[in-house]
Length: 237
Image 1 (tube, rainbow, N blue to C red):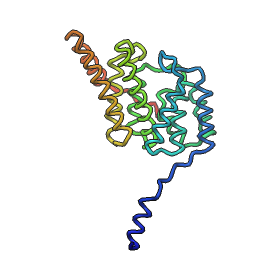
Image 2: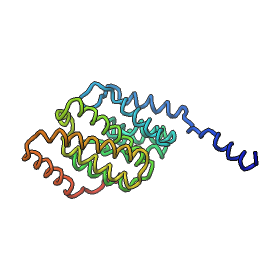
Image 3: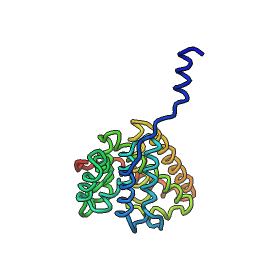
């Protein structure tokens, strides 16, 4: 075998390098489990930690490193578990890169939450200008959310929309808008999100066919109103 052929064989047999995962990730998992203790997914008995584990798994499967996995585990801590003091704690424990991603994945930072539509439009604005790390973790979060919504919709039908502040029209608008935004920089996660969002839209459309035409026109009108309304100013995310 010639030298060049030997080199090609060596390269083809070489195992890919695994991202180093160590004590920091273990500490982040314990930290997330502690802060989210007693929390469940919307109107279910599913521990909220299951969502954080899924998002971290997606981030690693998409090629993310330890920092991205940590940020995925912590992405909801600021808005759900203490606001800005928690963000400062994350910086001290896990560093500036993780902090930046968590900040970019948060749609509020303490105090009374603004109106749902304002928060979601603000989040969309932030995602448009976010770095690649933040966009990836954010997309992983939304992918797990949409897959869960789709599974619950197939099992429970229209009743699931009562769980969401945006109800059916707002929720569908929001995930479609995010999906379209992530497609500007396509990757494994954005493609899976497109599949999941499309499947959810088709499931809703199929179910809606059994309702009367005026109700369908009302739904379309509401979705268009949400999409065309003026976006709010960014809050510095």
